[in-house]
Length: 416
Image (cartoon, rainbow, N blue to C red; front, side, top):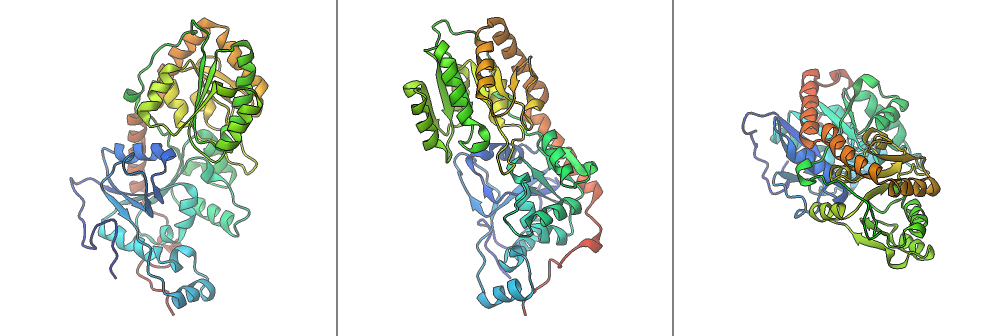
């Protein structure tokens, strides 16, 4: 069987440089908010990797040459109906992805499979059970949510957690949620996604002499980022500081409703919606500001943060933080030392924290210095990638689960 994958032929591609080969599976490589994935994939030193993906996105923003784009398989309608409705096989198999993955993994001599995002791992579970090599899945935030509306999903998620010998979580809070779902704590490793500190040089912040406070939030414009609370807190803050400005950097489905709320709050031209900014523009934005705000909240569906990358980047540049006691944020921000953390869903507490920073110049400067040094100690990308590679080596030593638990063979053909 022959498949065209990302411009490569089906000829065997031997590994180079004698390094172990990691297949990095990310269904979309890459959405703009997935910069942390890019930094991990491109930062490996002791392993070489190629990317497996269904769709290549933002190639200019995220250049990477060794990508296997899995083509849409040819559809044999009767075979698909047989596999789906008679044999009861999962979508990965009856859609033809199962065989495609097997072809690429054998051809590329992959030693290990790293699947990015928990829901992707659930989708790939039949393959993970069948592939003879070791594999792990990393959880980053929203991918840890259960899906009660999707029949069988929650059961497959728990099966995934039970099957794999190692699970990566982006924060301690996400690890706790995995344990609540039944994951063995001994399987979980904390995979913090660091930042390239050299791109975010630090500068100490001071009270602006002209009263033009600049407060920044950089994120996707989605529910869990708490953006309505940001606007309400800023409206209160601006009553005492009429020259203050709020800059919201990012894109997302809530933009129209947020612009409407800003207008209703009388903020007029005091709020700038910049859209998505690249890392250079973000760096400049951070250095023009005095405070970073990020009031994340848990959504009604249970979605929560790991550790937001933008928060780490802002802290590295020396921005004090006003944020919530949410998800992995307390693991990154030391309350009363690097910023203030307040309860979720309280714009009043958020406004009080902003005013507390503004009215204590010494506190603003001390928090600025502490934020920059704290991120450098705990979230350097080189250290986090080295730790990830330690996990890869540990996993290869562990091998894969007992072969008796395997599902259909990689070589199998389920057609009638």
